[in-house]
Image 1 (cartoon, rainbow, N blue to C red):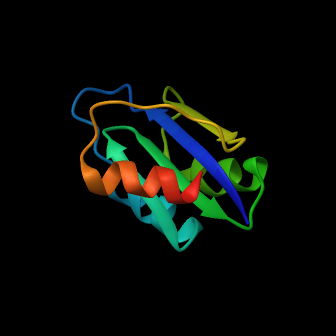
Image 2: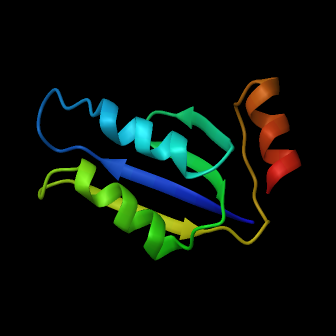
Image 3: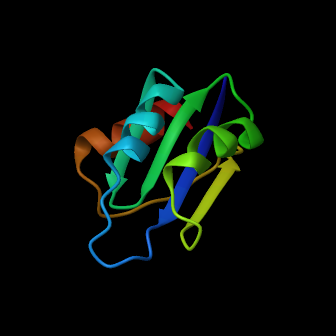
Length: 90
């Protein structure tokens, strides 16, 4: 199972896509969501599969990024729960 970063910008003012959030939460059993428009998920899907699953839930003027993570990372300013998830899952 690989770990992926998902980032998105919803460009229409006031956008809130509950279907997009639901779809992200269904990608894998483990998710990290400690930044507004950024998720980290563990999934059996590859990056293109994740993109293809999420793309129907965004508008044509929105941006979506899915990147496979290498296991290295550095962070600051997160609470204990968010930091521990990163330590244990990257």
